[in-house]
View: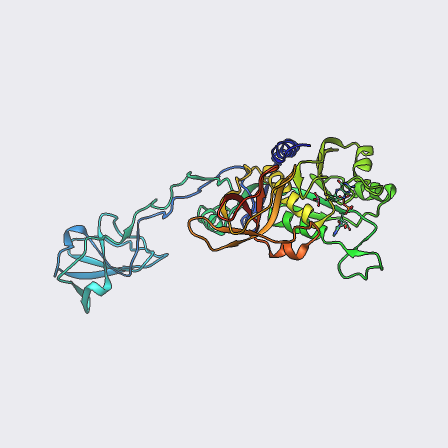
Length: 394
Ligand SMILES: Nc1nc2c(c(=O)[nH]1)N[C@H]1C(S)=C(S)[C@@H](COP(=O)(O)OP(=O)(O)OC[C@H]3O[C@@H](n4cnc5c(N)ncnc54)[C@H](O)[C@@H]3O)O[C@H]1N2
Ligand code: MOO
């Protein structure tokens, strides 16, 4: 069986960064830029006052100086009159200064009497002027290699960028399979349960910048499966769940093969997640997740997430962190075990405690978990205090 690392290499080889599209700035949050944006202007475009007060020439900036106030500069409306020695200009925050070589004295540091001001006996050396281009210059570029944050959006706006070139969102068709499944809100028959996998996967796709397309549940027969696979046409990635194992009703691999799946692998040395399969299907990729909800989610965390990142032009992030076992753990078997666990406040590294019940059907445990504790395959029992690796869950 393939190791998790080998399987990750295989799934990443199935996808490429998607092409660019142009979106209005208001739609760019969370998107990944496909080409740099170039500032259309310099910011600030002029040297501006950082305070409310009085602008004066540098040579007049002496304690106790008495100056005549001639005119006013406000934000959006600068002073255009002459600049003569011994003269001050009333100025407000954000206004262009009459001359960048001068000084703005805070209004708290002058005494005003009619049209004259007297500077305080003690003056600081701060000019209170924001120089032109202090933030950025025209033609400076921005292209962060991560999803755009609200802070990036602010910077792009200030660069006078109305539209942004971003990677297309990966379109992900999601197919849950199984005769036992009905949708939330429906009334299950006596042998049926509610489908949760499509909802976990769709939510993860959305959080990771993709567009989920949740298709109808496919019952366990070849014709129905084929029909639902047909509906997935055009998607960048088809994600199935269930029907991946060895049972008589596990038909996903067979039907996908009939439809042209070029399989990269089936079954990996991972717990949960053993029956994972992946390959190329038509113009896109396919990831066949196991049916157990925890298995589906853990496989999505380890494989779907980096695939979506690569499709958006991102380098898959290194996600493991060190932690210290808070309780003893038993030896592992021939598969790397991703145990559902919770983090406890610790010293220099967090402490991690696995849940007692690691059954891969337990959504309540999965929901309570805030990390996966990674146990290497064929590892000995480990005592509390041992250093281990974890992956935080979002
Ligand atoms: N003889 C063997 N049996 C099984 C093996 C094996 O190696 N030999 N592997 C086990 C492992 S490990 C897993 S994981 C499961 C995965 O099997 P499938 O991918 O074929 O999944 P199903 O049989 O369709 O379903 C398993 C389980 O999950 C429930 N399920 C399925 N879809 C959903 C959904 N959308 N929402 C909620 N729950 C879902 C389903 O009802 C089953 O209970 O196989 C083991 N068997
Ligand atoms: O691999 Mo299965 O996913 O152990 O439950």
